[in-house]
Image (cartoon, rainbow, N blue to C red; front, top):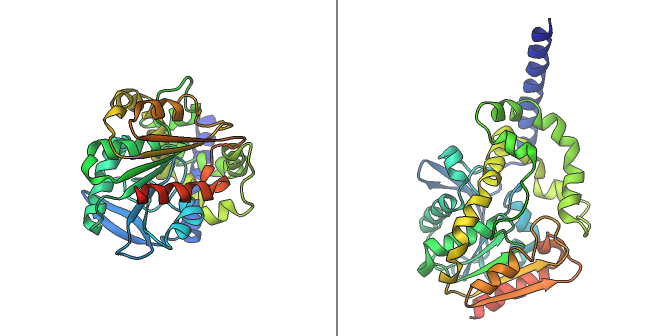
Length: 309
C-alpha cells in the first residue's frame, strides 16, 4: 500500500512539474536568436549597432541573460554592440554535452563558437558571479581574442564550505533527475522570493525582479539539473585555474561589494586582483552581490574605461 501511495504521489508531482514547466516557458518565450554551436544552439540577444565595439555579457548561476539585459544591456547598447548569452543549459540555450558542459572551460569554447559565427572579434567580456570563472576561462583560452575583462562579484578561487545540499543531490545521476522532475518546481516556486532576497542582501531587489528576469525558468527540471552541475564542479575548477591568472595580460576590472554574502570579496576579488598584472579593483562599501543592480553606473563606467584602453 505504501509503495502504491508513493508511486501515486510522485506521479502527481511529475504531472505538476510538466504542466508548470509549460506554463513557465509560455510566460518567458525566447527573445533573441539561436546560433548554432557543436551539437546544439545557444540563445543570444543582440543590442546596439553591429559596427560598434562588442561587449559580451555572461550571467551567473541560477539565472539567464535577462538578469543582465535590463540593468546593463539596454544602457550599453547606446554605444556598443551588446551580446547577451544564455549559458549552455540555461534560459533557452542547449546543453549538448550534458554534465560535461558544466565546466567553465567547456562553456567558454561553446560561447567562442557562437561569437565566431556572429563575426564578433576581440570583445570586452563581462562576467557576473559564476561567470567570473567563465570569463577568465574564456580569456585564458582565447587571449588574443579578448580585449578586456569586467568581473562583477566574480567566483575565481576555492572557498570554504559547500554549495547547498540540494545542489549536491540534484547533481547526482538517477536520484538527481528524479527529484528535479518531481519535487523542485512544486516546492521551489515558494522559495523564489526569499531566495532572490538572500542573493541581494543587504540590498533590496527591485519589486518586479522575478517577472522581468524570468527567474522561474530555473525551476524547469533540465535547467535546475544544469545549474546544480555547474555549481557542484565549480570549486575544483577554480582551484585548478587560479594559478594561471597571472597569464592574463589584458586589462581587467573587478567590481564587488564588501557586504557580499554569496561570493566573498576577500577570497575572490581581492585575490585575483593581486594576481593579474593589469587589474583594477573597486570594492563598493555596504553593497552585496548584485552590483549590476545597485551600482550600474559604476559598471557602465568600467566598460567605458576598458573600451578606451
